[in-house]
Length: 231
Ligand code: HEM
Image (tube, rainbow, N blue to C red; front, side, top):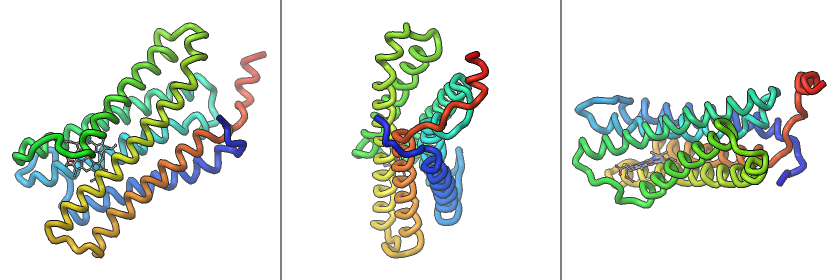
């Protein structure tokens, strides 16, 4: 499916939204939540790693991996490598990000996996992992037959977008859940922190929308180097 509009301007908007979402989530945990720590007596600092690693790692890097095919004027083989490496880093940071939520829960004596957010979160990371391994085996190494690759490509693209959209939705639920916990503990519902958290979630959703639009829009023409190689 192609939208019939050029992808490049849409990818610029996605980059800007990615930058804004990353800055906002870091600003939130540093300015309002006391900062970040892997080990601390203040267990909340361990939790703070969760949204930061997930937003910057899984969502921003994962989204950039998706649109790299539409954003970079490079040869197909180079773009494929960038796509799979960015997704690998996104997946690893996503796994570490989820681990920090478990670490926080375990060290604070809080139950695990009780919420819809956490169930969808496990679904997201499992599907992301399956998608990455399938893509690696079929499109990179050892690589499927041309028939298998051709048949797999639309499903790879569709499934990849589905997992990405599910990840963005799960992150929105996470922001909602955390803010609700904070508001139930007395945080001002219309205060600056509440506005910042909601605004960060909205920027994240907008980023997701522009990643999907970019993925469905038309890729820029192949660079001259490709033509040269073909000769
Ligand atoms: C795709 C994005 C995300 C995934 C895959 C994800 C995954 C998870 C998982 C698996 C847990 C369960 C940990 C446990 O039970 O010990 C969890 C907990 C939590 N996450 Fe996320 N998360 C995501 C984004 C976010 C974001 C952006 C926030 C914003 C603050 C957030 C807030 C929370 C909160 C408050 C908890 C603890 C309460 C609960 O278990 O539901 N999450 N997350």
